[in-house]
Amino acid sequence: MSQVERIWGTLVLGAVLGLHPAWAEHSFASPDLSRDARLSEEKGLPMLVLFSADYCRYCTRLSEEFLVPMQRSGEYRDKVLIREVKIDSYTALRDVGGQPTMPEDLAYRYDISVTPTILFLDHRGRELTQRMVGLGTVDFFGLYLDAAIASARARLRAEAGA
Image: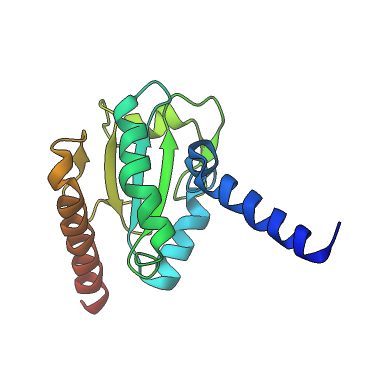
């Protein structure tokens, strides 16, 4: 196999894997929110945490139509940390304080009863702005999401300056 064929094959494989929804689905799943909280504090960024479930088709749509493109675009890299907690997972994770917990218990602590729900958190796990519950009107969801991110960033800056 020539070098050109190997490079071409690598590019094609990368494109196929990069576009596959199952591949993208796990790109912002986080088993350690305490590590993410430290990163949030270091960079001065809010954490966008999607609480979702495998059985929730609206969660899949929200992720595929909004969060994955946001992450891939690179435009949000300096605006927000995007993470996901699947409440129907049986895999333990660490909360922002570093304590082991189950996803369902973390959702209970934040009083989440509907998926999808998006929280905008600071590095201590406190909500910075109004949460987004459900998918709502898809045509305007991106605008609402951007406004919530801007609001969370503004509050984080205001608290840092206080």
